[in-house]
Image (cartoon, rainbow, N blue to C red; front, side, top):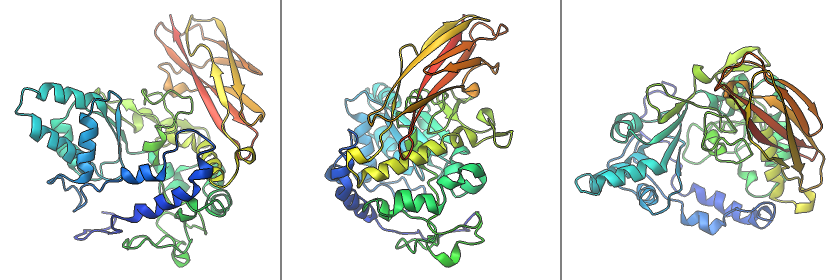
Amino acid sequence: KLYGEKTTLRWPGVTWMNELLNAYEMVYPKLSTHAKGYPTASFLKSIVKVGNINFEGEMDIDTEGSDFIKAKLLDNSVEPIYLQVWGGTNTIARSLKSIEDQYKSTSAWPDIYKKVCNKAIIYAILDQDATYRKYISVNWKDIKVYYNSHQFWCFAYTWKQAVPSAWHKYFEGDFMSKNIILDHGALTALYYSYGDGKKQEGDDEHYHGDPAKIKKTMWGDFNKYDFISEGDSPAFLHLIDVGLDNLEHPEYGGWGGRLMKSAENPLRWEDGDAVAELNPFTQKTDQSYPQTRWVEAIQLDFAARADWCTKDYKNANHPPEVLVKKKHLIVKPGQTYKINVNTKDPDNNKVTLSFWQYVEAGSSIEKLKIFTTGNEAKVTVPPTVKTGDTFHIIAEGKDNGVPSLTRYQRIILVVQ
């Protein structure tokens, strides 16, 4: 509907990733000194695979990409495999179909099916082809699915509409150019933005870099270096541990948004009206706000990592730690409890703590009374709460480095 009927593909080819990985290799010596876990460029190159790309929804043939996913799902590791869908699910579907074809007629099938379903977690940004609906949901009903169809818009083309105007500055050209794109090394220099003069070869719909075409677009008026879209990023942001304990509990909410278990399928978590939150800027419920509430901290974190590409450790900022001994408290109606939190900062920056109730993440909408003094919060539970009610308190630590970085701890109160 958006682009009309297509009979040919937009085709940037299959080697465009190499340019990015070559640039990553150039910044890796600096970047890797700032945090553990950054893989080498050679390792990343070794695991880049081409999947099912013949056309939208094609899942008829095994490909290098589908074989790679298949091998991961069948190996002996018990760790979950997060299958992030930044387009269609067809390569994932092909890997599952290949497993089914190989094992369904054998005695090993029940164990294979259980193993795959226990490991695979699909995080999908929209259904961008029909292979999940037509194949995966029918034949692999026990695979966990996280489905984001509304919250990602604050990081997509509609960010001007979804993000409160007070936070637009973190997406506008002045911030993006100074803090991320320009003078931050080879990798972020390749980041696409409005009016940057760039054009991806083979993609006739990548008009965004043309300065003559960035006014009066369907998404609004834009200026040079303005953010275009990262609509798929919430799937990756869900995996970043910032202290919110959301990885195994998508219903808790975090940098990848907040999803609720489906009433029809207990293995599917969704967004939409059921998890819409009060947007304090508009005072209205907002389907995007479970993701939007974190955009300031996310963009500043992005800026810090851009700094890491060119700066020595001592000249860059790094996130603080927020530490709490008891993250689950059993409480009683009408009682007051103390929560003590400690903070550490690797750069010896000052860390300011705040405590706030994440109302929508709890099972009760009643409001706690929270009084904060330094690193201590006194929390009074309303006398009207019921046994089994849960309340989520977020301890948020923000340092005074440049750019300012934020980390969290979640404390859950359970009424008995």
